[in-house]
Length: 354
Ligand code: NAD
Ligand code: UFG
Picture 1 (cartoon, rainbow, N blue to C red):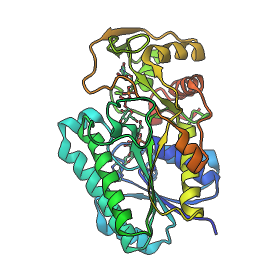
Picture 2: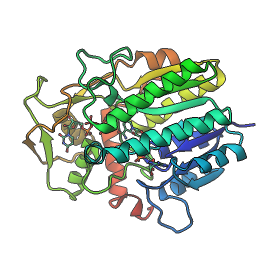
Picture 3: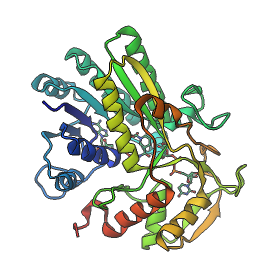
Picture 4: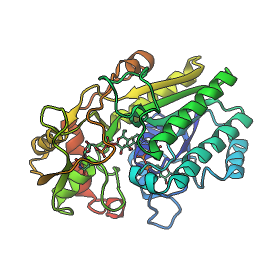
């Protein structure tokens, strides 16, 4: 019998790409998502991202639940009605600026929601979890590349980042209290790009906060120019360095994590970086985009964005050692897939499938 996975936040950007991989691997999948950051269009109760995932895979979800993780009765009913093997936990709010303006919303949604999930899991003896963490837990690192042993939490610059740090600490405590738990916290670096079909991708609400969607919106003419936040950092061209990672590689990382915690006896809390191990400056990304797509991005240098670290990239060796995962796609692929998605879907999921 194939395994049953509960995916929280599966209608979102990372979740939808992962659900596609899970269905392709014949897993049974239940998604719970409150649609706070996703779109229902056709009135049939399924978010458009997951309609497209079903279409691409030719497989159906076992169930989609339009629900909130802060509803503990709903969570208990899901676990009591299904024999869930593994939980993959993406659901959360992730906008850094909004988290500074509305900290209670972030602590309530991300922390309360996750505690509810962990409590239901404990109650129904489901103790295998893959959690979406972030390189943001490291803040501004003192050295590079960043290994999983670096301190976390001390330099988090915003409530969003602190929720990821706090949740990791809660999960560590849980694993100390009970050896039955097996939790893998995947610390993503900068996921970008889209599925090669260009039918699923990232749909930012309003003005994009992140670099790649901003670039594609400039390229397609929705925005006039990219603002590059600062060129006086101590890097080769003065702009910040990040470790960009193709969303399809990230999805494969989740498959490997499931294999490890499900098929192997792998108790305890394990934090693993998912990055390429290679950093690029903002200007290098703009250049790579031009090379990959032929489109030149208009930009101007503006002041630094508060809270930005100068350079962040992973030591990605542990992922290879522990789960046998390595990123295989490069920056050109990330740029061209992001551009294909933007062109095919100028209005995100509200665009007609061509
Ligand atoms: P996303 O906003 O596209 O997806 C998150 C999904 O969770 C959304 O569909 C939203 O509707 C749902 N959700 C939020 N709160 C919920 C709740 N209380 N109950 C039920 N559903 C809820 O974000 P994403 O980019 O796919 O990120 C997925 C996870 O990965 C998040 O936890 C995020 O913090 C983490 N992460 C993302 C990035 C990135 O750059 N995209 C980087 C590091 C970590
Ligand atoms: N940048 C610009 N102009 C923009 C947007 C970004 O110059 O319009 C620059 C930023 O200053 C930074 C780089 O591009 O140097 C990357 O910025 P992003 O906002 O795309 O990504 P961050 O590294 O700041 O943070 C992202 C998410 C976090 C997550 C982190 C690690 O926003 O939530 O990646 O995964 F935690």
